[in-house]
Length: 361
Image 1 (cartoon, rainbow, N blue to C red):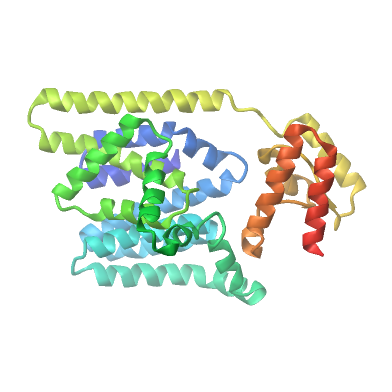
Image 2 (cartoon, rainbow, N blue to C red):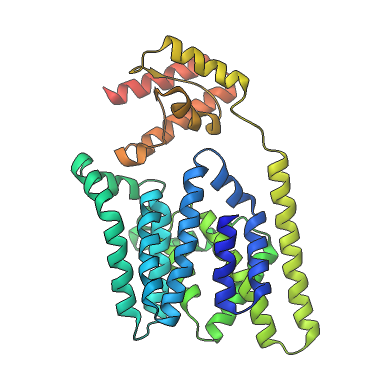
């Protein structure tokens, strides 16, 4: 709810329309993609980063449009806090700033960027100092090269421009929202370009080419903003009431579809940390030394919680491996173990563990 409130004020400020903010908020609120990314397992961290990021979007927009130094500084504070909470959200925030900065340049832009960048640096420098002195700068390059963040380089390698554009186009088409929502968002982009308001379209282009395929949550968020813009654009462009009602009906249909999907997602959710899971956790705590490691073959949501519940290091875990540069190896091993679990094959599990040990040796 805090995220949707921040999103409402952002869209309301952009469009000067209360109802545009409401429609955008409802779209985001009902999205199953945003729900499970920000509530399940490590969603408690992603949810906080999501809120800080949207609060920063609002602050930066106010600074960019009004030349307000207070909001420029606050945007930097939110940027620094977002990056410290979750680097992936910090990357999206940086692309947001770049889109508005480069494609809607004005006289106050340079000063705003200095204030925003300076305050972000001041907020994050203590954290950066501790991380770099303890672990070295490699942890940041490891983190940014994980989660397929280098997919852009792979797609553009070999000089095949068609590969790059097809890879980028598929990310937009496969965004988990109804087809009518994509049409409305596309109409909003055309409207903004027609009005020579290039900030949001530029952000979309940067997202398409520089964010990994795991960034669907950000595409859904931007689609929510554009849904609100489509309502304001219809009021501005179409003087005939019937056309406005058609656009409004389309928005209602899309929100209703998202509501059905979102409510179904919540209704069908299963509690993974049940009594049996806690019994296993107690067994491990009683029988495995504090510096020992364990292998617990369960679903991803459970597996993500167990290091915290048991206070032990798992044999196979991709969570946190981004910082160590072992994310791809850990993800491969986890997929193999998941396959063994699905096929109920102990021999398969033993072979996977032998491969893991062989890699470590």
